[in-house]
Image (tube, rainbow, N blue to C red):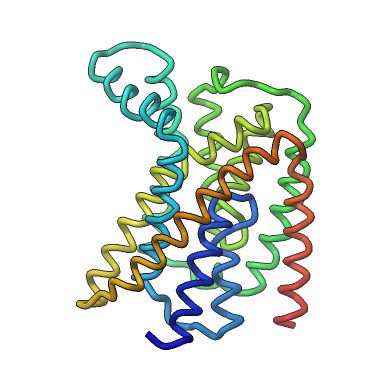
Length: 267
C-alpha cells in the first residue's frame, strides 16, 4: 500500500463518515475530493467499505428504534396488527421506494453530465437555499403525525439526492420541514431512511465490484470500514445534539461557502 493509496483511503473514509448524515452532500464532497487529487478511477472496494461503515454506525446508534420500527414493524405486518410500528415501517417503505426505482433507472440509463462540476456547484447552492427556506417552518409536527402521504412526498424529494451536491440527508430534512415536522424529528427520519437507501446502494456497488475485480485488499477494506464507522457514529451524535441549540442555517451557509470554494478551485 503506497502513501497515495493510504491518503485516498483515509480522506474518503473520513469524509464519507462525516458527511453522510449531515445536510451537506457526501457524494459532492467525494467528487470534489477526487477532482482535487485527480483520482479518476473510483475504488469500488473503498466505496463499499465506507458505505458499510456508515450503515453500521446508524444501525448501532438507532438500534432501539430499528428494533421498534423495522423488526416489530415486520412482526405487526405478519400478525396484521394496525399499530404505530407497522405505520412507521410502511412510511419508511413509501419514502424509500422512489429513490430505489429512479436509482435503478439511472443505472440502466446513466446521465453523465450529472457528475460534472457545474452541476455540483449549482446543486450545492440551490439546495442550500432550499434547506434555509424549509427551516423557516414554524409548525412542529411529531413523528406520530407522519402519514403515508408525507412519507411519499419525502420519498420523491429523496430522488434529488441522486444529484451530486444535493445531499440525501439535506433533501429529506428539507422535505420534512416543508411538511411542518420538528427539526429533530426530520433529521432522525432522514437517518432512518439511510438504512434501506445505503443498503440498496451498497448492493449495487457489490455487483459492480464482483464484475470488475477478482481480488480484494482486506487491509484497505478494514481501514475504510473502521474509519467511516467511527466518524459517522461521532457525527450522528454530534449532529442530533447540536440541533437542539442551533437551526439549519449554519449548514446552508457552509454549503454556500464550499460552493464558492468549488468555483475558485475549478474556475
